[in-house]
Image (cartoon, rainbow, N blue to C red; front, top):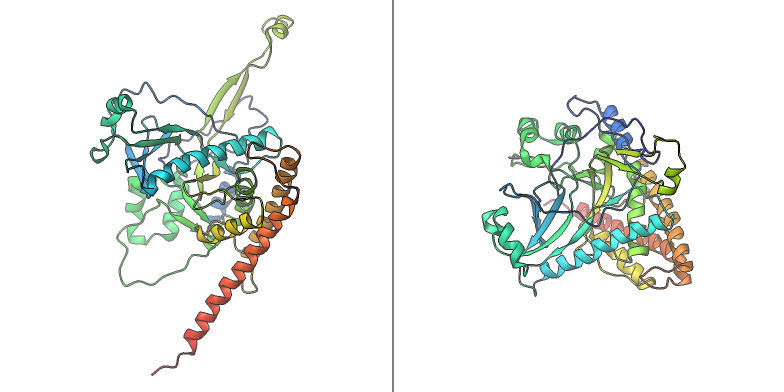
Length: 427
């Protein structure tokens, strides 16, 4: 789901918290060379994955504004809420339909991922370099009073009670990233229109480390260029000087957390590049007794500024299914690895370039390292998911081995088909 861009702040704190090491977004207006873009994206990627808040108010919004539709899928239609801090996923299908079952499952698995990242923090297993938006609950269609008060906010075709899944909004990538993609890959005759198109302001960029973009010749000219659900492939990252290697670690951490803490197969998730909101916070750690013993007017307020920054985000958990902590669970995770869009890198083969080799090596190393850290902790101190079997330490390596074997079989089948096609003699 893509979400509109909010104004991004770039000032710095006079007394920033030492934990806030993210880099603010710079001026999006100027034109950039590929080297500049890659350097800036690298600097702006934050390594923090702080657990998102579990409660925020969506009341006291009185202006009669129609909600903006951000996208639709089999699970529901996504709208940006009034103050742009939330999105709501709407479904009005009968309960027996699969889409409603998926919406409830997404609620369960989204919350499970929030809890998984909380566990990583609480037990000192992190930090991790990806984020999951906050999940704030599900509002059923039976809440007649709420719908009577808010139905007018929805576009006319949606003005009937439905189920709403409420979550934190992820902000679009900044304008200079959007324009760099348009300048590089949009047909020249469509570029100015693409830059001015309001729909392209709602852009979360899918990160495809497992595939190179193919150039396809078509006799039908393109009529538009959309950044919604845009997939940035491995070779495009290289061409834009956005090193794909910087995403290998976050991708590995996503799977490690999903497999061994949330214990799900990561079915049909999305891994995207998006932006966080700048925040200004004051806090106080001193007790009243400590303050009584201070010199009057001793500085005690702690001011923390977290600037807007790019992050790797994970979303859309409606098709995630539980896995067992055994070889059957690994087999399920491997199957899903190849059914998903090609977010995750593929094992290198002798024809692959150095880019694929390096990305896979980093992914493999981080996945094994982080998975072992997680499993060792959960063997000693189980989570609410239950006991972790002691032989689970071998499962991450088994997962990677089976991924490599399956990828080799798939490539061989493709090559055999290509060879057979090449053997056909002309008439």
